[in-house]
Image 1 (cartoon, rainbow, N blue to C red):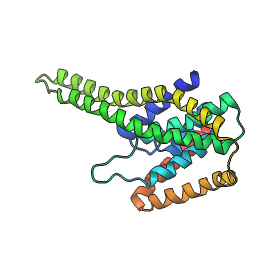
Image 2 (spheres, one colour):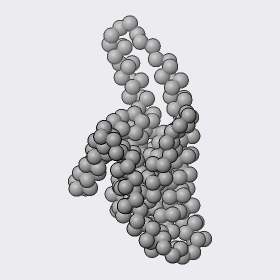
Image 3 (cartoon, one colour):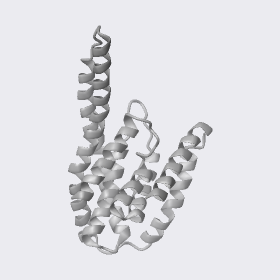
Image 4 (cartoon, rainbow, N blue to C red):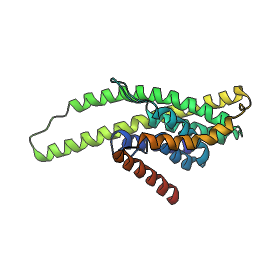
Length: 229
């Protein structure tokens, strides 16, 4: 239970950064999975799951009014399901474990996008009610309330979605592992190749000089976090 709460808190903080804050890319699965791994003590397993999800979602770009899945919810649920299922079962078949957790992360990302979108429309209706009073003190106070409230709503929705989805994802992961049998030949080699593919994909995606600075900043934050913890 404590791990579940910590993971939900991580999701809420990352949602703030991703949609209401600095957009430092920490909400991307390759970084969020690192934080989940540090919180649960299974960094390697969480990172492998995050890398797989990152590869999928880097290939999806918003076009013609479409939106990406909720990568914060999907990445945290996927990595969290892998770590918590590993804690509960101790199953050594890591390729099967990660494949099942990635599936759960993909589904959670789609569901999270719908739920956060619905909550976002309700939040926008609330924000439409903001009126600037004539008194400066009252106007300043109301502006702070609406700004902070809007940001906290974003964090709270993602945290609650993860809190509700993660136990289901762990149960589904364990169910798949029970039914799927031994890992298919070559799955371990594929997992070993994923980090190299992820690095190449990220470098390609942020090849532009301006975007490269953000990628370098995200990598620096991840390295400093690992060093501090």
